[in-house]
Length: 135
Image (cartoon, rainbow, N blue to C red; front, side):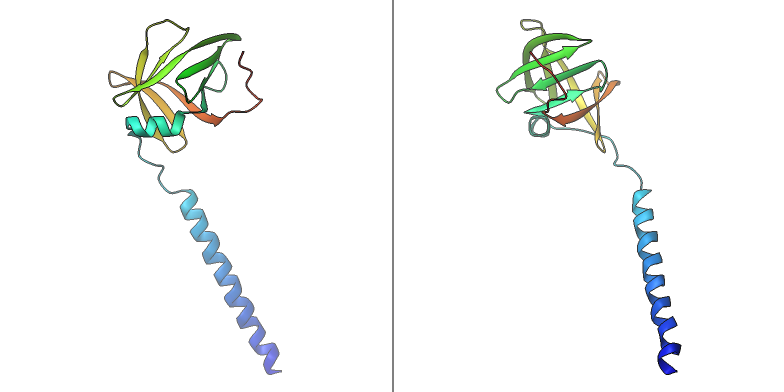
């Protein structure tokens, strides 16, 4: 009889522990998102070299570690160059065009290009995959 009386306490403690864990996980899921911040030149190079930047619909650009770039915009392929200048990501597409330099702001997993203090557009960074077809 004593065992039967003790088992509900053990089950109750386990249930209380499970509820506490669930509450902790829920609280962290709803924590405030990272505060947006501008990336340094070194961070830009580390995050973007060898990766694809894309808005997910209209354009995608593969930033090859050697400074060359391959891009697809609205179905058209182009080649160009990219570099980091100061704390800005600079891209020249098509090849020979002037470089357009933008500050990069990170907020969680999303990024925003910024110029002259104005947010231009949001984009994401992805690993190279067959999902993207660059000529």
